[in-house]
Image 1 (cartoon, rainbow, N blue to C red):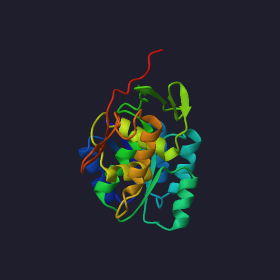
Image 2 (image 1 turned 90 degrees about the horizontal axis):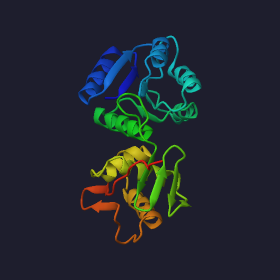
Image 3 (image 1 turned 180 degrees about the vertical axis):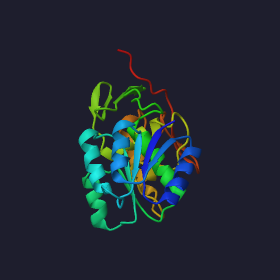
Image 4 (image 1 turned 120 degrees about the vertical axis):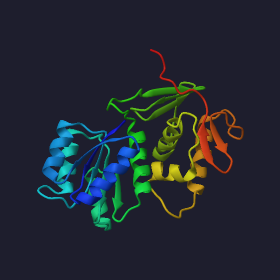
Length: 236
């Protein structure tokens, strides 16, 4: 169970969204103004914050800026009716991890929440999970975002690393191209999924012994991709 703080001044919207998140198994606290939201975020450390911008007392931008002073790794998803490019750029510059505009689809928002929680690698009690993994001759250090093969560093682009972790975190389950687009690239809607396929091919080229016949990064026909192979923390 992950702890989610929702700061939203529209009571009906907050209550409805809170119920949906609880159905997904999360513990949710709701606050309707920036001062209370910031206070709760600091006193009841959440695993993720969903933050409206146009909230009373302290607006969302100020809340985000103050949160980032205290915690630069807490996932924050901005949910706002302010959808101009300027608004989004300001949000990302202040440290937002994702940005959705109203109106929004609940299923898409839940997918983005799950993606952010997986990306931050935080479990239901707010503790960080193991930060290093191995499979085959490959070792991954999550905290430093470094990958080695046969003891030599492998240069992965940022999106390649994020894609690799998205696959590893599924623990063998299939993840669709669409879900990978949401989690790794933060995009939804009608978009060519060749982007995912291209990055998968690059990962195989860099990490698989025989890229044409991969052992770890597998294609599941008409479904997506899955990771095969134990990814355990190396013993010390």
